[in-house]
Amino acid sequence: MRKYFLLSAVALMISGTANARTTFDYMNVSANLIGAEEMTCSDLTFGDIIIKNENKESTIEAGVGWFETTGDIIQVTGYEAGYCNEAYYPTLESDTITLKGPDSTTLTITGVYPEDGYISGTLNIPANVTKGEYSANILVLGTYE
Image 1: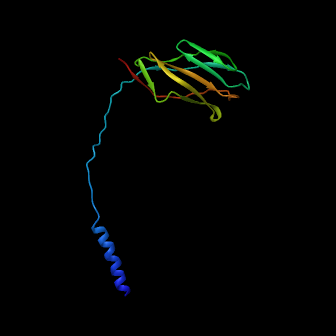
Image 2: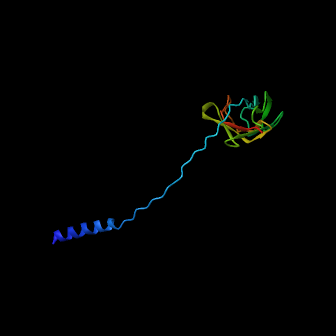
Image 3: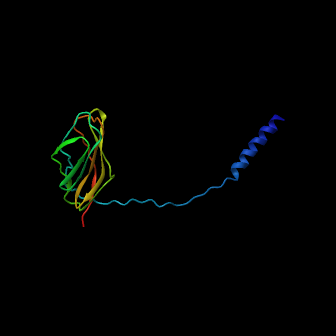
């Protein structure tokens, strides 16, 4: 009896896969390589920022040849918008740039916008910020027409 039960179970398993369906299709796979020439960009720098110790949240909103400050910023020297000579329409991966500084602290530049090859935005400084140098390296792509 036990033999017949095992044979029946094996027969059911075989018949279950015998009715299985096999399907197929073809898929297109492609890649489009676009050549890019190297361009030269000057740095976007907010320069030297003198800010009160134990500062409150502060910002430097900047454009081409101008900036405005809020909060506890006392003085800014050396601000310059970034400029890419071969990119009338520069584009970035994001409109936010994160700058890394001492002790793993960060600052953000938001509202990053291109204007005739220039790149600038608003530097956001949190309250009680750690003093020191902050920096980032970003990819800029450009279109020149």
